[in-house]
Image 1 (cartoon, helix red, strand yellow):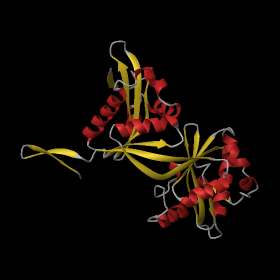
Image 2 (spheres, one colour):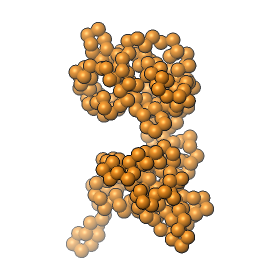
Image 3 (tube, rainbow, N blue to C red):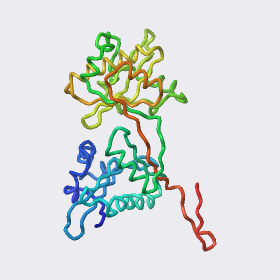
Length: 304
């Protein structure tokens, strides 16, 4: 068996080995060099050199100094022969030689047998285990819409991010800088989110007091960030408004993901959307910082 870097020319036999959501993201950029480079995708295929049969695939995405493994799969028939390790080694070699990547990571959902199995394999291959405070709730538009707390909320004060005051948005971004519980890229830019689904509330002075930022990835809606200068009522209003607007555009069965990183966020989400399924994560990480350098004719290991 051998490993090869995949492109639009040779990826077709391996597409069935890549999860649907990741495959759709790849199809959207594959074949366009500029889009592919901007996406950060690197894709590897494991194949039988004698029969020329696809055996496995690895998809990673390079962002900043981190290479995130989006999917890792080896056909069950070919497992146990070192193919998975070969895919990981190829990724490790490429990102190490680039000099831009400090670590490789994989986020494993604790309620997924497949991802838990992948995590155990990575630990066996030298990856370290890091517990993370990040957790996700999964639900649907219909389940949120029918939730008792939200069904009766008046959303008349909420307006779309598209109609939000630009000056007040910049002002809000500045006020969030340095906040301990701020988990959003600043400054907040309208173009980074679904402008018609994301919602804000202005007070009588025109200031933004509440905001809910929504993203769309593949077939999933992600409620990526919520902030309220007052009480949780404002978050409930923006959430109800976002869901009602989403139902005008997408099927009621559309999956909704809600990432949370604080205990307060988890408790509030569980209260507002009681039927949402909770998923915690474990981060598998391989550090590329331990490096070997030649000093006076001998190799010495050091850590940056």
